[in-house]
Structures are given as C-alpha cells and as structure tokens.
Length: 103
Image 1 (tube, rainbow, N blue to C red):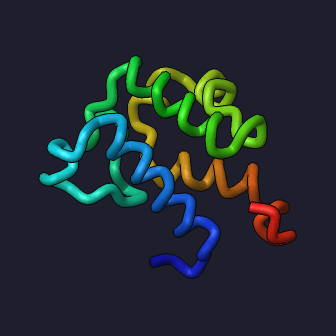
Image 2 (image 1 turned 180 degrees about the horizontal axis):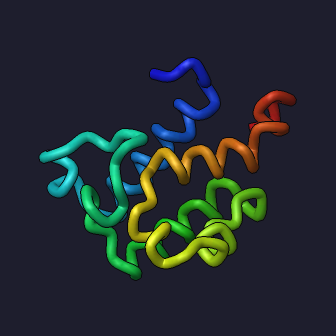
C-alpha cells in the first residue's frame, strides 16, 4: 500500500478490471502492481485495451478519457506503459472529487 489511499483504491479497481478482461488464469503467475507492464507482464492486445477503455468509461465516466490519454502518447510509450502510470492518470483526473468525497 502506498501513502495515497485514493491511488490504492484506483489500483484495486483497475486490477479487478484487468482480471475480468484478461482472465484470472493469466494473473495466477503474477500479481498486478503499479510496476506491471500492459505489454510485457499482462500481454494486453489492442482489443483488450478497448475493453479496458470501456470499463474505465463505465466506472469513471467522462472524467477519465483513456482513449484521449493514449492518443497523447507515442507508440513506444504505450508499449512501455505500466499500470501505475494509468493509476496516476486516473488519480489526477479524479483527485478533486475524491477530496470532496464525491468519488
């Protein structure tokens, strides 16, 4: 656990989403942590990124634009992206609401 309970909660939510998308069998070998890479560790394919975008939209609405976030990255950055980087992005997008208690 980090010193940021908001980020910890988001990490748990993203890990649950990823478990639903990639299946529990891939996660038996490795726990999802902030250092888990979408390509290297989780072997996410493009269709799974689309599924993740849909789940993020369902959970966070327009507050977190995952597709827009990816569009602002170079392909090398997307390939090297970690769960922690996504969690940081979500935390930044939702921090004001979390502080206000709306999240």
